[in-house]
Length: 190
Image 1: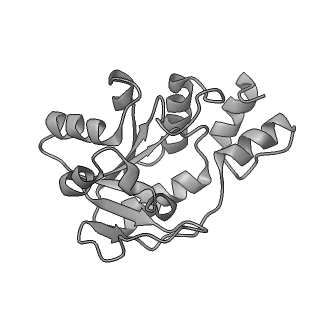
Image 2 (image 1 turned 45 degrees about the vertical axis):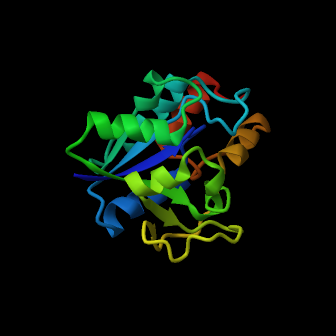
């Protein structure tokens, strides 16, 4: 099976994530997209992060009705912080029958050469890249292991959603209804 890996903290998952994942699952040769919920991103501060199991639960609720999308806690069981290359090596060892591609926003390409062993990421899995607003120039436009995928240009951020919740503003339509219900019921991010 050819699987797209969509890494993120998903703090919380929102419709932008879902639209990108669904586009990758339906407009490319990917058979599934796995949301790889990251317990700790090496480039992000940890203070506003919901517990990893709560974030995983929100992702699972958001994608429950789509068999092409799957949530995984694979990184929860790895050394922290977990670097993408380390996770990919473990995934390739555990699932040798699958072929993987890393899904990434174009805004990450300029910093991609700073990633640990980024050349090996390209060699082992390659990238499927979706457009992002204000993406910085990069040197990957003609790289044979980088595929650019036409997808809606979305500018929805989890930061905006968290700030809205703290300011008692509605997040309706920014997240699926089941996600909003759980966030409100459990008083997440307030």
